[in-house]
Every structure is written in C-alpha cells, then in structure tokens.
Length: 253
Ligand code: SF4
Image (tube, rainbow, N blue to C red; front, top):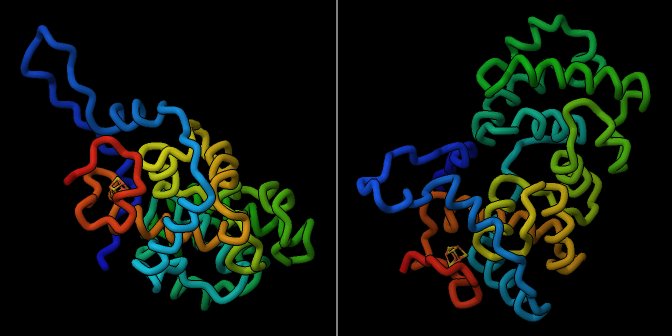
C-alpha cells in the first residue's frame, strides 16, 4: 500500500467563486471544519463492534508503522513523526538509533550534530531541540528510563497525549487512543464520534465510543482506514467495508 503524506490537512482550495452573487462554496479545510461542527452521533455498542470487526478483516496486517525496538526509540520516533511521514522517519531512525542508544547520548550530543542527524524530517531544528530537552529530563528525573505513566510522559518536552498514548500502547501494553490526523478526521468529519476540534477532547469522545479492550487496536484500524480508504481529500467510499454503517452524507458513490 502506498502511504499518503500526513500533512494533507494543510491543503486549502483558494480559488475564487465564479459567481459574485452566490457566497463562495466552502471547500478544503473550511468545508471540513464545517463538517467537524456537526454534533457527535450516538453509536450503539453492537454497531461499533461490527465496524471494528470489518476493519480488522479489511486490514489484518494493520500495525504501527514506526520502526522501534524499545520505549526510547518509539518516543523519539513519535516526536519526529509530527507532520512527517512514518516512512521518512523510519529512514532517518535506521541510522539514528545505531548512534544514539540511551537518553544520555541525545542529552550530551552537540545540538548542531543532532540537528544534522535528523535533518531530513520536517521541522528538524525544533524537533532536535525538543528531543534533546526530553532526554535531559529523562536523565535528570527518571533515571534514564521512559516512564510508563501518562502524566509523567506528557510532562516531558515535545510529548503530548498522542505521543504518550502511542508509547503506552505499543511499548507498555496499555489500551489507549492516540489521535493522529486520520483518527481526528474520521472521528469528527466522517463517523461523527466527536464534535470537538481539540485532539485531547476528541480522544475522550473516542474513548466513550470504542470498547476499552479495543482502544489500541481500534485506533490502529482507524488510522489505516483513514490512510488507505477514507482519505482526506476524497474518501474511497465505493471500496469501503463500513459504507452501510457510515453516517457521512457526501459519500463518493
Ligand atoms: S463510507 Fe466513505 S466516508 Fe464513510 S468511512 Fe467509508 S470511506 Fe469514509
């Protein structure tokens, strides 16, 4: 499957309307924001279970696409993945993780050196600064270990709830919901799990919809469905396995 770039939410159609009398038709981000304002739907537990079962059947190979072998590597990779493709992050970390093995390695590296080592990723200077600060905090406050605790994780530089939830789910085996661009779009604009725009509030709404035992797997399935079928610019509704369950009014069929 070809991975779609993660920053497509930034696209906006700025073409003016051809008719000056009619208000310009909202497209792109503006139209999606209007969709996002729709009230959340009530989802019956049986319907959600059926939806997850079908997505599981459609994407049996669905998995977190960042490469890592331990908690520190996943923490660093997830910080780097903000507004960047997992594929590019994996290319960079393949070399990076051979050079930097402990938080101390990042904490003590010259800032300019770390910047160069992650240079292909978007916003590499800012991310290098956050990674270094985060690793200094791991050394000073957590004995060089990545904590298995949400509050401790989100107190680290560069770590928000999404990153913390990814680490807690995929390293420490906790059931969590990580709201990335795909989960956000599906939850607010297509399936109407949430009418919120703040990712932390969306997470709470998704938690209220998905069965707790399926938080992590449900999140990964939503990510894959968003990446490969329910795409941002034009969902492939004619290929969608949950088309009859989906409340989206503008299906592309
Ligand atoms: S029917 Fe279309 S909009 Fe609804 S989930 Fe499937 S691809 Fe997305």
